[in-house]
Structures are given as C-alpha cells and as structure tokens.
Amino acid sequence: MTWSSRGIRSAALLSVGAVALTACGGGGGGEGDGDVTLRFTWWGSDTRHENTEEIIEVFEEENPGITVEAEYGDWSGYWDRLATQSAGGDAPDIMQMDEQYIREYAERGALLDLSDVDTSEFQDAAVEGGQTEDGLMAVSLGVVAFSMVANTDLYDEAGVDLPDDSTWTWEDYQEAAAELGEGTEDGVYGATNLGEPMGLQLWLRQQGAELFTEGGELALTVDQAAEYLEFTQGLVEGEGFPSSDFISETRGLGPEDGPMGAGESAMQTWWATQLSALSGASGAALEPLHMPSSAGGAAENGSWIKGAMFLSASADTDHPEEAKQFIEFFANSQEAGEINGMERGLPANLEVREAVLEDADGPEQKAAEFISEVEEQVTSGVPVPPSGFGQFMNIVIRAQDEVAFDRQDPSEAAETMVGEMETALQ
Image (tube, rainbow, N blue to C red; front, side, top):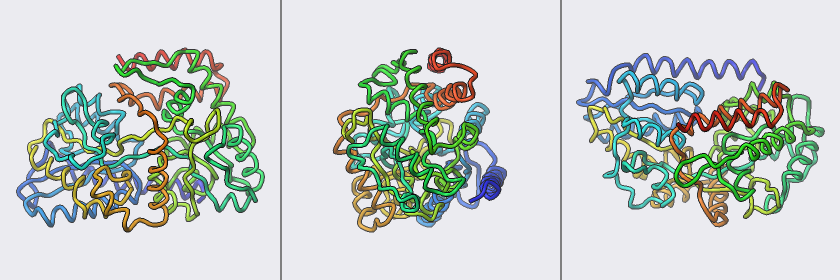
C-alpha cells in the first residue's frame, strides 16, 4: 500500500465516523424508531466496525423496543471527542473503554456502576481490570497479550529464519531486523518502533520493576526513564529500521493503515488479537511471537495478560437498564461472541470463549494459542493504571521524539518525561 492509498483510506474512515457522529447527535439517548434509543461509541479497525454493526443488528432484532445508534472512528480522535462530550453533558449511553481511562472517568463520576451485569463466567483478570473502589465501572469483552507480530512472507523473501521466540534477546531482534531490511525491497523495513506505553511497561518488568505501585503512584525513576530512552533509541538506530520521520508519522495508525498492515514492516508490536485485522490488511501470513527479553527466555520477558476492550455506560444515561442490557448481551451472548470473534480479545466469558474457539482458524486460532501460552508463563499482572495514565502514551512518544531528533539527550528527556507523568497523575 502506498502512502497515497493509506491517506485515502484514513480519510475515508474519518469521513464515515463524521457522518455517524452527525447522524447521532443528542444527549443521553433520545426517542428513535423504537421506545428507547441508545448511543454507542467505539474505535477500531474496519473489521471491528463491521462486526459491531452486525452485533447491533442482532441485538435490535431480539429487543425490538431498543434502537442502538453507532458512533465510531479511529483511536486518534476518540478520547478528545469523548472528553468533550462528557464535559458538555452529551456523553454516549454506552462507550468502548480502555483500561488507561477507566479510573479517570470513574473518579469523575462519569461512569455507571455495572456490578449487576453478570460476570460469573468471566476470567478473574478480565473482571479485576474493570473494577475500582466505586464498583464495576467497565465490563471486559476479552483478554489480550502483547506480541511481536512477524510477517513470515517477508521473512521468506529475505531468506531469514523465524527466531526462536522462546529464547531470543533484544540483540537477536536487532540482528533479525537488519537481515530483513537488507533482504527486502526498498520501502520495506525489518522492524519499527515499540508500541507505547506497553513497551516501557514490558522493559521495566524485564528489569524486575513496574511503572506504578499497587497504590497507583508512579514507580518510574528518572534514571530508569533515561535508560529506557537510550534503549529504544539504540533499537531504532540499528540497521533495518526506518527513519525517525517515518516512525513519528506512522505512530498511532491502526492495523489497516500502519506499517505492518501496509506491508512495510516485517516486525511490529501489536496485541495478539489484532492479528486478524493485520492479516486482512496486509494479505500476508503473520505469526505472533513472544516478546524478546534482556536475558533470553519467554518466561522472563515481562509479558502480562490484561482485560481488553471494555464497555462502560454513562452515569448520566436516561436508560441505565437498557444500557446494561446491551452490555450484558455483547459480553455474554454466544451469538455476539461468535460475530465478534477475537477482534476485542480472547473472550472474557469462558463459555463464550469455548464456543468461539470451536470455529477459530487462521489468525484467530494463532492468537488464541499465543494468549494461552502467555497465560501459562505469566507470574503476575500489572497494577491497575491510575487516573491520568491515558496521557502516558503521548508523554513517552514526545520524549522519544526529543531524543530521536537531537533536541534533548536521554537524561534531559527523561527528566521532562517523569515530570509530565507525575503531573498527569495529579
């Protein structure tokens, strides 16, 4: 996919989202064709949009008195829009929520307690990820694990063997990137940047540390931040990596539009369950690999399992019971689970998971097997992110850009980065 086609595709997606937003204006649910109208907002890939619209259709057929209006787009503008809507008293009735923002919205009193939504068949990690002191603020639709996705077609083209991901180190990763970059055509890279802030969390866990304390305070020191910035800059300065300009321009792009979906990178970090969307976009054979580690060994690479793609309801919704009814259907209905597949994670409801896995094949089967392997290796999860964590991705990226473009050295950028994180948590 060329840069031109990527831009056209992104513009088309934003246009669709804008049309949906225009059509769905209004407060916490107005009167539509049915007795009750619920607004539901989410972000994601084209695959997720299609799956979600199909789930909505099934729900409406089974609940003729409820109409669900869709508001969707990509990640980049989602949180700014949701913050504006919430501040203006115009929050959607139901919203797709990320763990980075659950506590923040809960502490504002913006979320409805969903404790009476049935989670009895859920994996513990999925339930815990949506809980705060105020109750169950978000219901997880699945669990995920971080992975290094490899384009095996590009590996074959370059004549490079897939690494042994049970033992590979960061040095092995850099060597593979260099070989892949050399063995593929111009405009294709061996690897690109790590996804943030998960890359930082993973690296800290490999050092026996965490980004946060259990109490929600920042555990990252300036020295650790400087070491991490040196580490990531050292990675992308290696052979086989794109320029700093390319990395900066492609950060935040979704599966279809990013370097891997465009066939421009042989390796990139993604949540394992995004394999289907990446495979569909790239048309290539993809493989989720365990993350490299400092010491070598998948059991020592710091990976964790987390709840993914939560659903929350607005505390100001005019229709709390119907909102909970939709969330319960989405999370616990086998029919919804089979439509959604693993687009939002390996299903958190274990009965739904069993039904989904019976028909899983291709990328979905690979993702499920990968997450199951990680579950067996994980010794501990990460602490629940505190309010303000949603700003960390941009904070880390800004610091990396300051170093990449020689505006600050790692020590200076680390001072700024830690200071901004502390401010965000306040």
